[in-house]
Length: 293
Image (tube, rainbow, N blue to C red; front, side, top):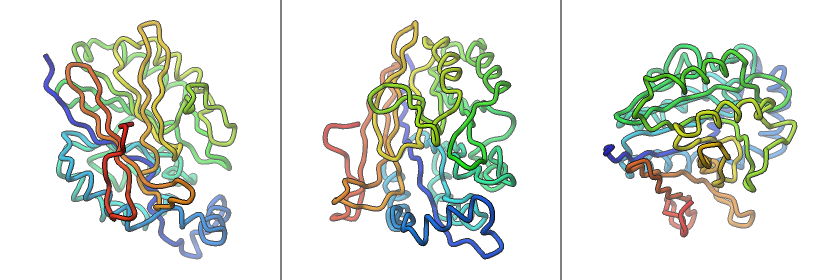
């Protein structure tokens, strides 16, 4: 019998800080226009982002998982703000962070270089996939984000080879494996997520490796799509749950049905119990969502 574990999952927080003039070049020119001229920055809230830290801490998780898009433009000042808000929370329990496409926005930040520099020890070191074992649970992190005109990801072939080898390694015998990634491979209806400008370009290849080890993988945790959902990936060993809480840093907008969310996951004897929490702007805090995830 495995020891029970409580996991909190947050994602797509999008800490936003104004760029300096010297930082507005290339892709950031368009992104800055989106944020400050077209109003996208108002879709995220510093009040909510700070309340998120308090709400997650109150859940007293054993492990906290953060599946990318910590920042809006991978600016140094955004990473600094992110760390100032969340370092006290991250230091309370085991925390595992991986970068998203907004954290690998430009060539100087490709591969999560800036995230690696500023978010130690939580993000880890070495080539992906990165492995973190906590008790009886093995957390395997992929990084498929890359700079480019679109938010389109790609999992490098050498990373897929290492993933296949890792998932087949006897070191994981007896462990419950949770796969962490930023990109979605399935949409809310369970169909392939193939929106060209924001999908994972080789999602079929990634899913083939995952499905080949379906008996070992308890669940896939991801972000990227801001409206959360729960679906599954078919495998020869049975369906693998896919869990996305939705953006954890969104502003409360009841007219558009938009707010921030995070998940808590109870893992007991290889069974998952998921509770989604939403930010209630009237109360100014996160509350359990009726009906769960």
